[in-house]
Amino acid sequence: MAQLSLYLDAQARRIGISHPTTVSPSSYITPYTPLSTDAEEAATVLKANEPVKIQLGAQIDGLGTIVCDTILIKADKDDDGEVSGREADLMLATYYANELLLRLMIPPGLMASGTEEEKKKAAAEKRPTATKITQMLETVAKSYECSIVEGTTSWLFERNEIEGKKKIVLLPTDKESRTEGVPEVGDVWGVEMGISLGSGKTKTIDQRPTLHRRTTITYQLKRPSSRQTLSEIVKKFGNFPFSLRQLDDERAAKVGVVECVRSNVLRQYDICTDKDNAPVARLLTTIALTKNGIIRLGAPPQLDVSKYKTDKKISDEVILKVLEQPTARSTGAKGKNKKKKKKPAKKAADDEEESSSEEE
Image (tube, rainbow, N blue to C red):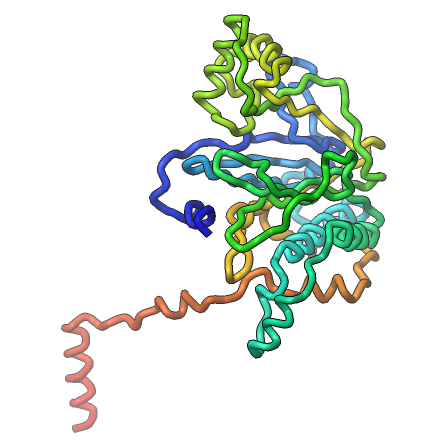
């Protein structure tokens, strides 16, 4: 709980960015932040009905939150009508899969009600395994003829660290990318969901990686330009991700990071897209697990599902039952804080006089 209390501490001191603002086109999976000095990429045009992922983050005293939302580009800026077809399938699949994953993060019995015996019984239930979680999420995706993006990973967040000791990996692509640890009360997690209209397979494309992050490795850099670039990175971003376009000189930064990446002082995030170039949607929510359930520290807006029309739906009764469960218990704190407003002394006296006159 100590970690969580720091997140909720209003007196925390240092404020900064935990993730640069990135805008990823339709088939892009990883955050995309093209440089203004790379003219062709900077001229990328977003098209109507294209699902676009917007991601950004902030940190207070090294405790970060990151949010990613997917929006559909409208053909007309004033168009606020219904969405149908495959775009609706993609958005609904992503929304419901994300809501299901959030509920599966809650430890067994935490939201149980009833007698003490019933609560103990609920708490004794086994947690769903990583395989079971993936199977349930795949069922949601397939209900809308979509696929989970392989390697989608949710991480434990710690101070100055957005990839902590625990993680939940959906459809891991290698032995190193396996689920480790389980969510517990007091944890803060970045919960990610990625859904594709294609197979969900990924590929790395041949574009300059512009998103980087400092590692814990130390190395005596040889080039002055590399040392200058690293010094600026440490001062501005600490251990959080950054875009080269955030540095003072983009062109110098492109040269300066080369030795940093080669010596593993910096980690570069390769640009990945859907293997079939199919549209992809992503959501990322920063949550805190408390004794009363989930607090969404940073989350995309709730989807207005009434605007998305499709003939497809989730039919699995077990999943529907989980989706009906709340993510947090009402504490009634708001009601307790409400106080009856006192009338001003003069107003109260006037009311009493008026009441006395009516009685006479």
